[in-house]
Length: 235
Image (cartoon, rainbow, N blue to C red; front, side, top):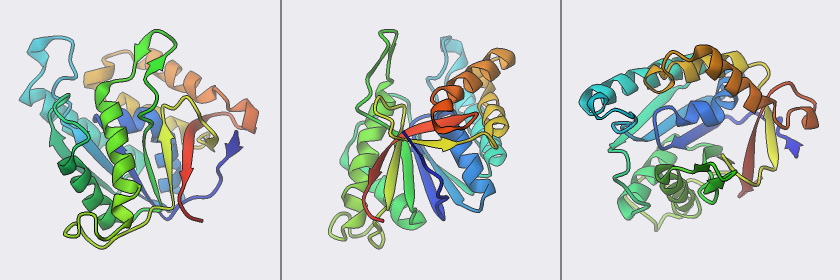
C-alpha cells in the first residue's frame, strides 16, 4: 500500500447518509482542510430511517441529523454541505441522481472525489453493505466517469470538468493510505457529533474509530490511517 502525501486544492466527498463521510473519511477531510484544501460534502439521504425504534424516525430525526451534519462539518473544516434530501432507501442510480451529482461536480470543480466503493458488498460474513451506500457509489462513479468530464452529458448542468482522481472508501481493495495521525481527534469528535446514531457510547466509539484507523498504519509508518481504492483519471 502506498502513502498518499499530496494535498489537493479542492476535494468533494459524496456519501449516502449524514454520518457516512465522517466515519469513512473524516480524518482525511480534516487533515486536508487544515492544510489548505477546500473540502465540500454532498449528503444524498435525509437520514430519516436511521433509527431502530419506529417512534424515533420522521421529520424530527431529519432535523436532528441535519444539525449533526452541520456540527461535524464545522469540526472537520468542511467549506460547504449540500444535502440532496432523498429519503433513506428511496433512490437508485438513476438519471436524475446522476444529473444532480454532475451539477455539484461541475460547480465545485474538485481535484478529487471521495465516496463509497460500490463493489464491496459483504464484510466478514457479519455485515452487508447498505444498499444506499452501494447505489450512491455507482451513481458517483457514473457521474464522474465520464459524465461530468464530457460536455454532451447533461449540457445544462454547467461547464464540463474532469476530476483528477477518485478515492473509494469501505473497499476490499485498498491501494493508498492517508496519514490521519494529526487529525484523528477531529475525526473522533465528528463521528461522536452524530449522537442520534452513536448514542452515549463515547468511550466505545472512540476505541472503535482509533482501532480501525490503526489497521494498516504500521505498514506505511504512521500511527493512524484511512485507506482507499484510488482511481486515477489524469495527472
